[in-house]
Image 1 (tube, helix red, strand yellow):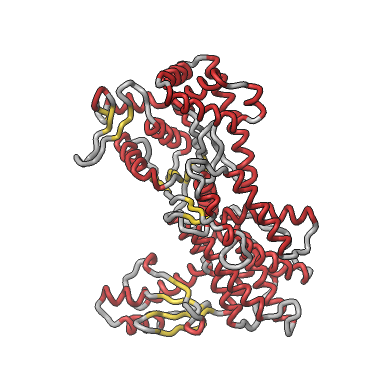
Image 2 (spheres, rainbow, N blue to C red):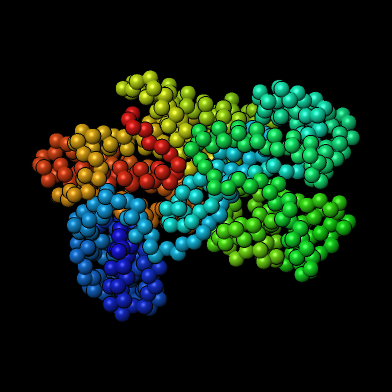
Length: 574
């Protein structure tokens, strides 16, 4: 069964066909009007068709609307150069909002039934073992988690992998540093900071004595060859790192289906290299290295094995792609990695296509860097801004904000609100901005009850939930109610509700959660305008009261769903 804008799209499509126009349903686009005085929705299909048949757009539009035969559309008119403006019947809105309120999951499943689905494997977060997570890890972690949730909402099977940096020469250097300067008792008490200190000390000392680099390489060679002591020490490093990472992921409420680091693919590269050599895809490069030649002479070859026989990150990535294909047979492989790696992924995907490792579509979801308006954070040159420090500060600032607002909360309630608001504010700050630009971090905007922020959205939804509590109803109870005579502010809210499935689909297509974030902000603005101008509990009649409670319940369901897709919790009260 078709819902929301899909229902209206199908009506216009059929009307155009009945008017003897040849048309693809994908060409019929329904958009909100800028103001409801000009209709609830608009369609520009007449202008598109007029361009194809050489007719007058307004005449084409008149032919289309003359064929409309549906109780969903109340009236239409031709506007401007040939737009079809559409007013929708109140009964249709009633049925739609009743369904949203009763079972939004099923409502969205039916809304997305025409979308081709499949399996997606997505790599997100991927911190380096033995180092603390920095604030820069937030972007891949949070953006990737939201993309995962959005695709699940569309009906995809999604596998979220965390491709840890847990292999390479740096571990030989760290093992040497532990053995030379480390104290295991000290490391046990505070593992990640101590391991980082030792790693930094190795580099400081190697600048004085270049032989240390050879010692580090030798220790890693022993690790590669399966040396028992080095293997045990490496396992210890990985475990302690994962324990620390899990603390951060738990605070962010982010989970992974699989955590396979680079080391997992060490025994899976040989098969790919042997195949590439046998097929003549991998050829000799300079100094005995192995490369994949580009199709264009001016492009750079892809290096897959160094002249000393060592493999590279790209070699392990190729093994990862083959493993993903063999294990999950995905339709879509997604890598959420910053824009600095764009050239690398172009090369990787070229190499993968030459080696025919998968039929899946490989996508690099890139994002810009995080920039800080706070001078204290932005001027820490050369020093990592610890993610844990940022989360702590956000919760502390949220707590002070709640106290400053004089919210009626107990001590425990205020702490819980600070946690939800602090973490949610950081996530929303990232997800409400387009990932393709640098993301600006400004504490004053991140934690504000005004403007496009998590606290503003949280306040809006808790306000709506408060209305339902005062009415002695759960949201689902309102699914039996019907819309009465609707004011303009109520219609504006309903129109926004109808566009939600389109926004979710659009976010998936572009891998951009900011479309959902900005949609929720606009919905919150519409709802608050309605709330401030219309009595709900004390409405002028019982029919109007029920009508407005159905609207409130629908807003709650959509905002809950949208915030869940962003990975943001909602407080009980504010």
